[in-house]
Image (tube, rainbow, N blue to C red; front, side, top):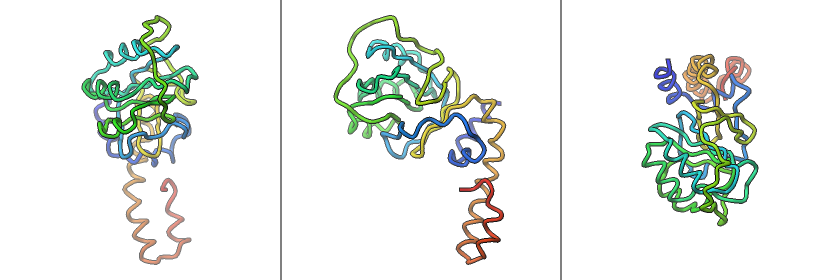
Length: 207
C-alpha cells in the first residue's frame, strides 16, 4: 500500500490535499529556504533539547534513503542546527529533505546544494559540540504546531509543509488526484469565456 501511496503523493498537488484535510499543516512560519524543492518522504525525528551539534549528527546517521529529517528545536529559534555541512551530509545519506522548527545558516550554500530545507529563517548563531544526552532521535516531536511521529509522511513544497500518517493520506489521495485532473478543464472553460456561475458551480475541491 505504501509504494502505491508514495507514487500517488509524488503526482498530486499538495495544495489540492488542503481541500480535503484540516490537520497536519505546519505553520506558515516554516517556509522553503531552498526555493523550488519538493519533498515526499518518511519522517526521522530529532528533539533537540539543547543546541547540540553532536545530537544532530546522531540524527543524520539514522537517515535512510528517502527519509526526511524533522527537527524540533524545543522552542529555540536562536541557534541554527542546519548549515552547509549538515545539509550535504543529509544529501549523502539519500535524504529527501530537512524540516526545522527553528533557523538555519549558510543560506547561499544551502541553495547551491539544492536539497530542500524548510525553516523559520536564518542566523549566524549556531549549535555547539556539547555531546549531551537530553536530545532524542526518533521520538514524537512538535514541529510548528504539528505532532510528528517517526515514519509519518512529510510533504513539502514552496507552499508549505504537511505531515500526516499514511492511513490519513490514503483516505483522500484519490479524491485529490481526481480534483487535479479536473482543473485544466475548468481553466479552459474560463479562458473560453463561459459564464462564471456555470464554471464555478463545478469547482468544489479546486483552487
